Length: 119
Image (cartoon, rainbow, N blue to C red; front, top):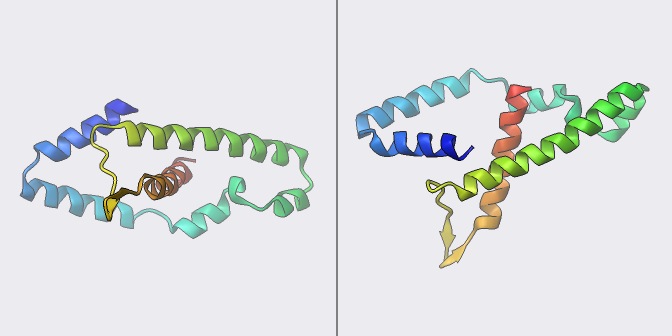
């Protein structure tokens, strides 16, 4: 995990402005091809309400959703911690006070989105 963050950070650091612009342009194009986040989340049972899962009347589905929920929570925590511990992680500062807590929430949302995409 740290190796990936370090590689991305080093790649960003080593590239010139023109190359960074091309990379950003490529990232924007790639992101535009991804499904809408709200539709994607709605299609994944791990995000369904308990009532919806219960109404499906499938014990297998309920167990699978519970397992996925807790496994995902651990994965998100690991991703967030790895990103925060990365030497390339820069947290915002507001009025001299660190906003690591809000940064973690943003990182948590990004990790959730990433996991939605790979499921």
